[in-house]
Every structure is written in structure tokens, then in C-alpha cells.
Length: 164
Image (cartoon, rainbow, N blue to C red):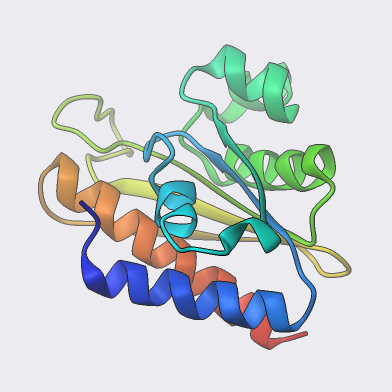
């Protein structure tokens, strides 16, 4: 179950996007589809939500949303560069106004030097604007990191559509 606060965030985002005639897609790794699940839990979300790509494996990131092999090799899957390419690829492939992406280390394992558990990059590609990527290090266990990622992604999207 998703927390009511997250569902409220999703409702607000969908209403604002629908009012502006905007559409959305996601490309998710560490959340495994939780962002699009939060959005599609809301009745009527199909007027805004067009697609959700779950790109957990590097191969899926490449095939589904066009992340370049060179980017993965140079920066690793958990990086600003990969989050940027995921968001831009999802937006292009789904033909939407705005796309969100996330890639990170939800834990409990997977940390490497310089990339701790809780490190997440969230990308937001909006038509007619530069793509933004935010870096976060969320505290807590796997569920907490994933939940915080969903909330932060919805927040980024709300801020980006407020600029339209």
C-alpha cells in the first residue's frame, strides 16, 4: 500500500498536468515501478500517464529507453548521466510532455566507494526545457529509500510543471 501523503501528491500532480494538457511517462530502476504505480492508483490517471518503463537491468535501460553503453561504462548505472538519459529516452519513446526517471541503491547491499546505500538520482525531462537531475541520499531501509524516491520524483515533476 502507498502512503496517503504519496497518493495526495500523485492526485495533485495529475490534476495540474491534466489542466495543462500534459502527459507523463516514467523510467524506473530502484523503485521498480512504484512511481507509475502511485500515479495509476488514482482514478482517471490515464488522461495523463502514458507509459511506465521498469528498467532494472542495464540491458533494459539500453533497449527500452536508449541509455548508451558508453554512458553506463563511464559512469555506472547509478549516476546523473544515466538518470538523464533514462528520462530523455522515456520522454522520446513514449512521446510525452514530461518524463521522470530514477536510478539508485536502495540497499541493503550494493554500495560501492562513493556510492552509498540510499544514493538516488532522479531525472525529469520536460518538453521545451533542459533536463534536470537531482542527487539524493535517503536514509533508512530499502522500503524507506524507495518511498522517499517516489515522493521526491513527484515533487520534482510538480515543480517542473509549475514552470510551464
